[in-house]
Image (cartoon, rainbow, N blue to C red; front, side, top):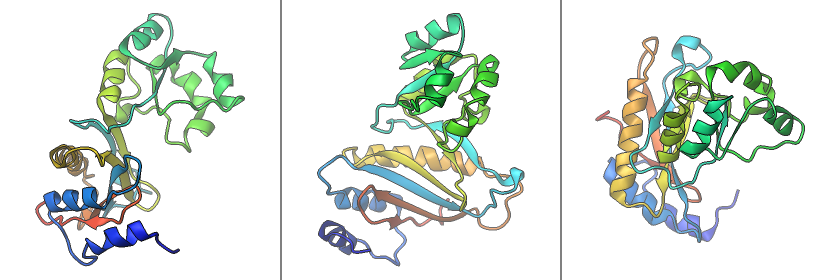
Amino acid sequence: MKKGKRYTEAAKLIEKTNLYDLEEAVSLVKKSASAKFDETIEAHFRLGVDGRHADQQVRGAVVLPHGTGKSVKVLVFAKGDKVDEALAAGADYAGGDELVPKIQNDGWLDFDVVVATPDMMGVVGRLGRVLGPKGLMPNPKAGTVTMDVTKAVNDIKAGKIEYRLDKSNIIHVPIGKASFSEEQLTDNFQTLIDAILKAKPSAAKGQYLRSVVIASTMGPGVKLNTAKY
């Protein structure tokens, strides 16, 4: 695949074989984010675990101190007073059974995160085939199955992100936008890596962090030196 001129120019800033310290990596990624829109900066963690085994799963959620720079739409499955509570907390949509056909039949997916109260999980379970593949299923580990809908909605709106292994044992997570300051991106990354290190399964053997790369949407990846972690 031929890379564009902008990408090629950006790639010249980065030594492919080099492992960079966090501050330098963040600075390079910001410099190489030259698209006309505000690029998302993502971190990619390749872990030395085998996610096919339940005891080596790495999954959780963390609130990034400076948010992700993206406004997130939240849907809450609840009933009674909890619907009003969710909307008062800032949820974009809240409701119960009546939302199922809208999602199942009409293909409505105008939301980024789904929260559910435990008593609604039977209803949400019916949507597993639609929400599951999109990574939208509420999960107690991520704090999205809870009776405290106010806290859940507030955390998500403040920049709470979920991290989980993909099929190739890599975690991909946004840590902000190219318009963020280097300090904000560094803080967000540090908070995220601390959470991932803390989530290390006891069954994981050998080197846990195989490689860590940060990159902007359109820019080349910058490899981090993980020795100090």
